Length: 250
Image 1 (spheres, rainbow, N blue to C red):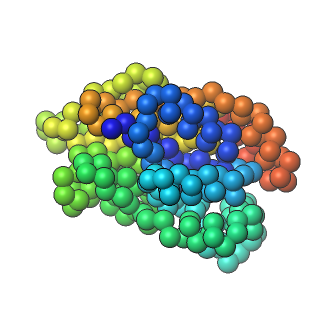
Image 2 (cartoon, rainbow, N blue to C red):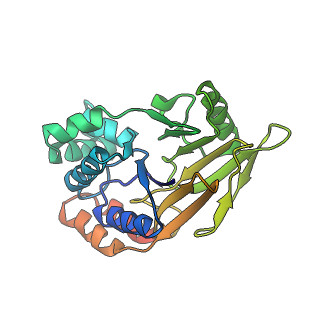
């Protein structure tokens, strides 16, 4: 099976459609969305509708922190984050909000554990920025029987860690489009990057494809019309900062 891993779509419909089309070309059999379907972008309603249809067809979908804020917006409305959460909340209908509110924090699919942030404290939304945090997440995943792979998002970057013979976690820098052998005799943790808000200096959308039969993980970058997505943000009246980010990839 080839499992397409998409995270941090952030209401970017153009990037979502580009990644779905690319994954289909790569032979993806199943799709998993690792949270943050909304937030920042101009199209929360169409993105949630698209993913609700895919969920009904068997896609796995997790909750991210922005999904949680959109379903249950904060009491205040004075900061950039609070006002954006309220804007997204108001673009969604009750069915879409209920869908986001009911999403799980983790999903286990045989040897794979999916989580938006970290497996040790998923509700704290901790970022996997280094091997130390990755080790805590991977260790916590041990309570799930048979898990060898932890895949998450949240950090908007693509990274890979594996446990070495001395039990230390070793970082590995992936190259887009190059399959990485990820044998199940080791334990692995990957952050698969952001579909709709890349922050590594390139505007290309990010996702990954896990081939369970070949035990290979391939990180992908997908060009799409990021200028159109940025203009949609400006047209919606959202802060220019969110549009600028898309065009700069930061």
